[in-house]
Length: 319
Image (tube, rainbow, N blue to C red):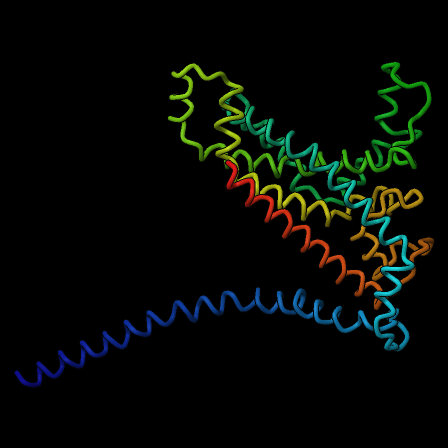
């Protein structure tokens, strides 16, 4: 009997040790699963940031030895580089034009698709499909469509009698409008899905009660739907602002920042300082100066984000 009791105690002890190991194992498994992402994040994000912080004080072109210049890169940026500040203005114009079109349009499309009519699911998939398309492929497709002499846009406008001469959609006067149209087409489906997710979280009982009280559809839209979408709308706007500042792939394919710098945005300018787009580009590789410009741009973008968050909190208190 005593041996049996001892065996039971040993068995209970083994079970307790096994249970402790099982509790520890999921944590180890979690760490092992996170390890590849942490390694890639450190190598591709953290290290380049510290690398940029170092070389922003150097004159370095990636070929010759780096020369310490102190604050000369920042002095040049703030006093002599008009291209940078022009590209920053172009970025603000591009972001404002894109947001003023794509946010209201995606909201209206989401409201219509939320009615759940026949074929709405298929239409939703069609509108969302540009989001999963490569930005370079999408831009190349629009480059062919907006081509001056053999593009389909000018061809059909000419057949309809709306134009007499081919329109230079990627010329000096219309290039910014064209790249904004391409950006709206590419981002519409993404923001539509966000709005749809927000609309489906609003209880239907609220709409039914409002309808019984005689509230019209437009009143329900402005006084119920929009206020209850406030948290979702704030997130969508922040993501849209950040994405608008970082859009360079479509512009790179369509115009390479031209003509005459009319579509040169700040992130494309910094990219060209690190990796010139073509040999004919007037912008030469200046990695040290590009690092300084990227740091200043990051601070500006962070300041814009903080201002937006502050204003969004004020609006949240109002509503």
